[in-house]
Amino acid sequence: MMTDRLREYVGHETPTGDTQALNAFADRLLARYGELGGTARRVPMPTGDHVVADFAGRGARAGEAPLLFLAHHDTVWPLGQLQDAMPWREQDGIIHGPGVFDMKGGLVVLETALEQVADADHRPVRIVVVADEEIGSPSARDLVTAESAGVFAAFGLEPPHPNGDLKTSRWGSTRVRIEVTGREAHAALDPGSGVSAIDELVDQLTLVRAVVSRYDDVLCNVGTITGGGRTNVVPGAAAADIGFRFVDPQTEKAVLDAVTGFEPVRANAELQVRVMSSRPAWEPSPATEHLLDQVVAAGRSVGQEVGGAAASGAADTNLTGWLGVPTLDGLGPVGQGAHAVHEQVIAASLAERADLVAAIITSL
Image (cartoon, rainbow, N blue to C red; front, side, top):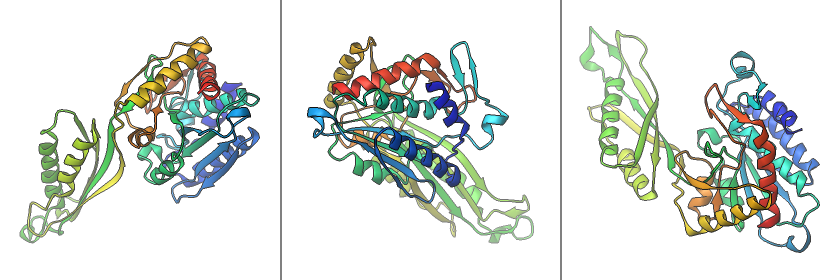
């Protein structure tokens, strides 16, 4: 049953950056894709291995361009979350647990669809499952770019909109780190010889807000701040990680050019601004609209009405969409609570989504 497979996957916790846990889960995926008839390989990375699997086409369509499916096996939850705060629970047709929605449910949907099409004629299928999607896929960008070359279309197994609609575009998402080096000194006996890294960082963040205020459609969130140690010591180091969201590549470039060009405000402070990961905006396009029309028809063939709408969140489909590959996302099960302790999926939607993905594979 799909729920059994999902429970198995949720039971194997995979926090982003936990190489051992991620690689052990990659072993599961490699074995599973092999069982389903695919040729799977791992792409080693220091922060966790990615998985690529290819399934040959069948019948007259065997030589056609492949369909690319994008997924990830990392989650935002630490080891122990399943036991401590979010135990697996099935109640009233709802499944709760860390990763059920984002996005181990999507992995199970795809596997089930592949089982369903095993004896049907279809295009080749390529799967890329990355290990660091939740931090912007910094080690997977080149892999996704390479594997998207020559594909017919790309599909993401991320969660859909709350009503089940697919995602037809996404805002760009970029993580920036501002690091300041100052000079430590005694805060009372010799403050003048010190350079406060925290004060410099605060001033830099004020400048960031000033840049962002010039644009109507930019989101900016200072997610972490670190620095200092004691109130009687002028802090010698400070840093902040900032998440930006952009509606179009032009705005992204303008904001990032400004921020990465900042200079220190105070004498003897040192400043480094680094882009940690970047997903360009995936804008609406006629190619994606045409793909949605094809998926709508595929959905109707299995008794489902499929819709599509823009999304503000980012994922690996940002990259394929930006590259001009016809792209849709949100083929995971319907639910709610991504990155929240009430994360959940509607159990019946697992099979419904698998039917839809199978119809896509056999009809496009």
